Image (tube, rainbow, N blue to C red):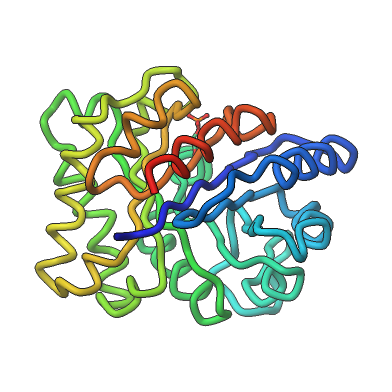
Length: 253
Ligand code: PGA
């Protein structure tokens, strides 16, 4: 059985004092038992401080974005090795906000995925369709294209060391969660597509659901056979809300 990963995407929220309180609250309330991991992804300036605070605890730390370049004249960018240097184990790549607001293409996302892995960081690849795309019946084609860009650049073997997050864009920050069945259908499709390349890797890769996940709907989503955790925005900003999802995961393992 795959472990769950419960990951908080703080987006552009927080400050030193609030982060310290949030992290202390999460660490104090980590559910007992095994079979799940907890991760928080603060904004860049706080990744180092949060990983220092989380050191020695079960809480892992990641970032929300990374440069596809190794180093050099890229003003304002953050290299994968820098993230590694400040204690980052994971990085989100291709979040729909970055694709939509900052024009990141699937090819650029794939380059970030590869660069992160080259620096020893596990990429969390976000894929998902918009409401228009779902209504047009193109959900599978959209996630396939987003996945294929990474398969073309990195190959199936790279997914032995990566996480996928299926995040329907229409469910992000809207309170409109996909139903467990809607999410499961797409998760199963993603896994089947990877299985076409390697059944072993497809069987092991964690596929998270993201989009208005919260304590009240987490258990139903996480009970689905192909949902291996959550990428959580709004409900990751309060320790109790985040821990309610962690508890749902723990109780299923
Ligand atoms: P949400 O965000 O939980 O606030 O919908 C999820 C995400 O964008 O990763």
